[in-house]
Image 1: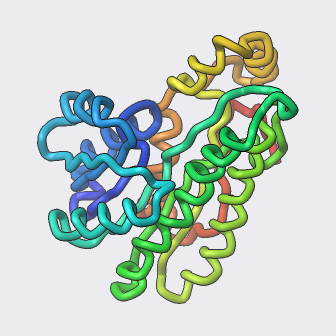
Image 2: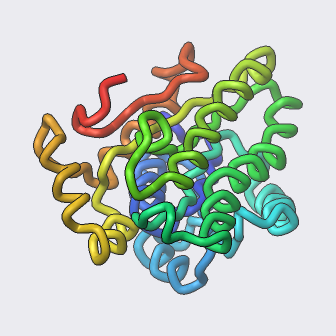
Image 3: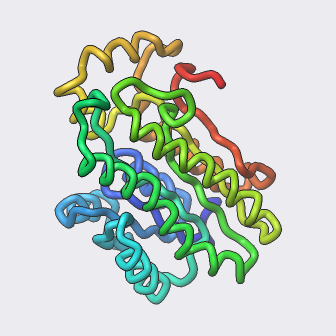
Length: 247
């Protein structure tokens, strides 16, 4: 029960990696809150996780919504010790077939969402001189990915943001790191498979360990970086990709 004294916020926590992460934190004794965009997904998550979890409809790409949800969250559970920025969105489509509306959604969710949540939650961590942020990025943001150009750019931006904030926040004993999943069995992968299955199949064949990750594989990496075993690790990117990316 290594997180028995911790309060955790997981964005995009209603399904996939976020849901698996919430389950793991609960098993280790944490108080858990999850934010998600769609109310119906939160209802299903609460049924899975139990009534002790605080669920809130929040659009992380809206700074006013983030600030409002953060105020309610701290009034309910107290200061947040661990922030997991997991909310994300993408489709696998050719860059020249995409439009500005799609690009804006990608950047608003994947990059601005992390900026907004960090800006809202870090001040309390600074005051208490403690806290952990784990940002879920993507190997696409480290090495590029055909069919995900703007998504890769947004995730690469989160990597740079994480490293920069890790330098700024170290004096306050606040650690920031990234977990970088490779192909993972989530709804996003299923949605992309409808349009880009040959590309996904090709990518899976390149994984040295020979299989797609499960959400819990990523969750366990998140808990490691959030926990005491990583107390001297900050500004790093941990790839969980079955060896697909080795950089």
